[in-house]
Length: 358
Figure 1 (tube, rainbow, N blue to C red):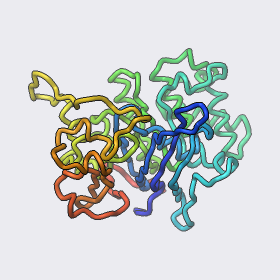
Figure 2: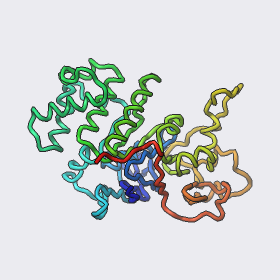
Figure 3: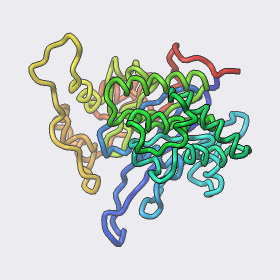
C-alpha cells in the first residue's frame, strides 16, 4: 500500500470580494490543509458556507478567477509515486483539461443543474470520454453504455438518447457518477452526492460508490454534512468551520473522542437509536457571516467551553496534533498545551476496503 498522499492540500486560502471594486475581500477558505491517500475515503464535514465545496473546487481550478483569488497554498497531485508531485494551482488550462475528468473527477451537488438540459445523456458522457481517451465516437458510445450499466441503469443504450428531465433524481445522480467514472479517475470528489434524494436512494448511491471504489482502487473526497454517512463510509474525517479545519483524524478517533467543542456539538445534536431525548441539543448562535468573522477562534462566540481566558477572543488556535493521528484547533481541548505542529495526514483505511485490481 502506497503511503504517499495522492492529493495534498497545503495551507490553501481562497478569497472573494465583498465590494464591487474588490477592495475588500473575505477568505471563504483560510489555511486548509489535508491529505488523501490511495484507496482512501476522506470525509469533509461542516455546516453550509464553511468552505467544503470551495476547497474541492480549488483542486480542479474550478473557482472562477476573478472574482475568486487563490491567496496562498499549494495543492500537490501525485498520481505516480515514482514522479515528483505537481502543484495543481500552477497548472495551465491545457494541463488542467487533461487532469479534470481523466485523473480527478467530480460529482456536484445538484445533478439537475449540473447536467445540460439541451443535450442528451449520451452526448454529455461521450464528451468526457472523447476528451480523455483516444477512441472514435462509436467506441465512446459503447464505453458510455458500459458506464451506465456499471452504475445500475437498465437499458443503457436507450438511456443514452434521453434528456436529463426524463430521468428521476436518483437516475440523474447515477448518470453523474457514470460520467465521472467513465475515464477511470484515480480520485473522485463527491460534493454531497446524496443531497435531495430520499433515504432509500441515498443508501443505494453510497453503496454504489463503495463498490466502484473497491473495484477500481479509487480514492474519494466525500463532502457531506451527514455524520451518519461519514461513520459508514469514511476512513478519515476533517471537520471544517468558518473556512478552517478545526479537527482532523481517523473516523474512529474523531467519533470515539471528539476534541473540538464544535465537533462535540455536532454529535450531541444527532438523535441516537434507542436513547430518548425530550429535546436534542443545538449549538447556540448562528454561523458567522464570512464578511465579519470574529477575531481569535472563529467558534468562540458559540462555544460553551469559553471561560475567562482571553485567548479565545484574541488569538486563533492553530491546528495541532494533540494525540497520535488526531489534530484539533482549540485552546481548551485536553492535551493542547503539549501538542505538536505537524501537517494533518492520516493513512488509515478500513479493513473492508480491498486493493486495486491487478
